[in-house]
Amino acid sequence: MADVILPRFYGCYNCRKHVALHDDIVRKDFVAGHRRRAFLFCHVMNMVAGPKLNRRLLTGVHMVADVHCSDCGEKLGWRYEKVYEDSQKYKQSKTVLEKFKIVKLNW
Image (cartoon, helix red, strand yellow):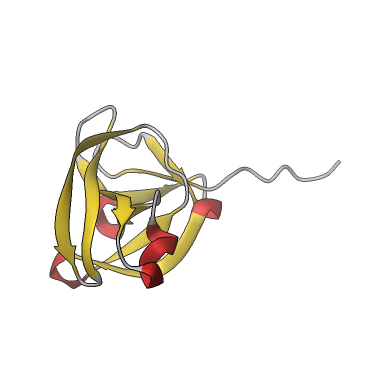
């Protein structure tokens, strides 16, 4: 009988609600505020987005929306709603989650 491989999830550090799959990481070398590590995901789940606003980030001004856990409301990162510079377009419609705000589940 073959071993079953379960998906590796990340959860909200506060309530452990599933928020992303490890396989959906696009890049692991992102930096959030105060030089904290962050991951860029192509897909997230169980999130609620806040209002869209233009924000100056390390790579320029982008239209972003903060994302919060749908269960406990904890802010976990942000979603790139609109990216203005061509070299940064790969970020559009993707979500950054701060590493210290997510925990590994099913690992």
